[in-house]
Image 1 (cartoon, rainbow, N blue to C red):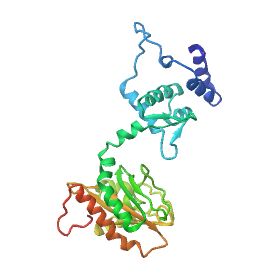
Image 2: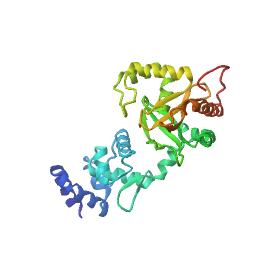
Image 3: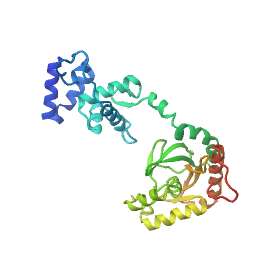
Length: 308
């Protein structure tokens, strides 16, 4: 296909996007279309062999938009789907996807769909709140799993959400909806409550002021009730999420502290809700695991301090 014919197809896409999107993607992916034809015409005096590069900030935002198109529910996307979810023209999406694929941030499957590439995982592993924290915590998480044979999780706070950075699953343990990299609201999970209770008061009030999503009839969605829950977490040094995400699981969590005593993560164990008498017995066990991780990170608690 010649560049002129391809531009005609682009023009038709603007008039009939649903009708030509699939044809356009096929032409982009299967034909040897020069990347340069997607650039705007040069201004007078500008060489056609070196098209003007877009402003760095705009280019960075578009690249991030492409990566942001992927999430837990959309781990693999076609070029058209990337274009739609990133809100970019198909030609622009093609150019950015090609760049990211060449670098290794994306990988293309035999089906033609794109997934996150290993190179991006390598970079993400350098995050101190991710891989580094996980390495320190893993021996304690394994001990906690051996003591309970239930799902064990490690999470950090990112804004108003909790992000899971490690999980050990038990074969006979209750099913959970979390996975490494998953995000959930702070107010409904055990680790989220542990993190929120020790966050800035301003953040706590912002979370309480917004509409709190209910996942089950047991989810705490009343701001006054949530404030009481957070106060209890600070008093006891542990958080209990009783059937707030699913009605068959209870999460017991405790905060993990960094060298200066700030809460940097939370560890939890999830047990079946059919065993309500069991989770109080797990509170000291989870707190000991959190204390061990905290000590490994350099924290030295003062005598009698709660919430290790």
